Length: 175
Image (cartoon, rainbow, N blue to C red; front, side, top):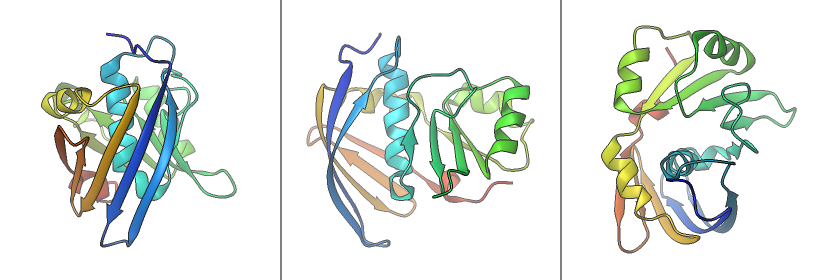
């Protein structure tokens, strides 16, 4: 199912005792042309998982020619290239050479396919179908989310639904 709204407003309340980060911000996030609600949910969940590192969204889906989500230093060097789907090996190698770290956010089936073919600076973060389905229930044109992190857990709620993510594989250093 494609996204009904072109722009989603997210009122975010984020807290993490360990890093002493407590923020309330409003974000406007646009869906990509033809983006499904499931992909949008995956993109937003990944963004929230990396929130303390100040990630950026790509302007549109590029099919792996540029990152879906990225973190860069002040000189615009890519510190993290995050891809939300499995790419051909050639594109994965290119991404791993252009960034300090390559993060693949995959479902269980995609994770099983790529485990044998890991590049040096690559990490894999697996989101289950249940987590994506639960977060998809929160998708609205105006979302009010409370997010709190107690390493390695990340909890996200809209006051009605709750999604918990174990960020252990996201926090560990690449192979």
